[in-house]
Image (cartoon, rainbow, N blue to C red; front, side, top):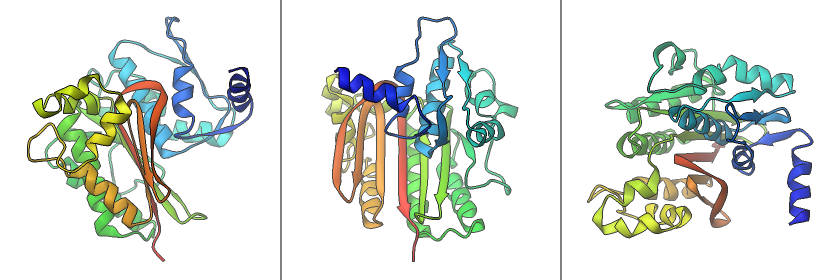
Length: 285
């Protein structure tokens, strides 16, 4: 235990990239006993899409519970400037069910690959977001399998629209030219997979099961709170593997990662309501 503590403490003494491996630890360290808890991002030098979505949903969820935060911004000029350009704190450190409108950022003709986009729960939103994502990739001459990516994005957003019981989600994406990889994350702070699935009598037993076990179950074919549905996450898993990509899915304190090395699952350091997902896909030759 002492060695583990030293390793974790050491990691946060020096600049870090915030991603799936550590964003939950950052959230778990927040002291909620304070009237305005502090989120310390001082050592963060780069934000990957999953961490942006996860941190944004962490803020939105707790703001819905009337909890606001004080932020220690990154010491890195690049990281601090990026959050400022995205109006990150103004957009996420507020109650989205009370204040909307001008605080939201939607897809436009000037949307870039590094923008964080708000997704409103409305009819046809899944198809609209899928089309908008493809336009951004084409405008930036990123070569991916267009039809498949459109399907995957649509499925992720559709899951939010149908199952989250929330009005807002968020999309973040980045392109890594040196790795020739596109990474896209979608997240919400809704009721989560376990609460959603357990409303179906066939899966009522899942209400007492660990989040990681429930997440694995949700990826199986025809598993849904809506009888006769439930192919979305299965399709995402299969198509991501066919493309040589990686699919990360989290809900509560459970996670599942599916890639070429197989399937990994387990528990995270923080129990965040909702569903957060990330696709990492290679660029075509």
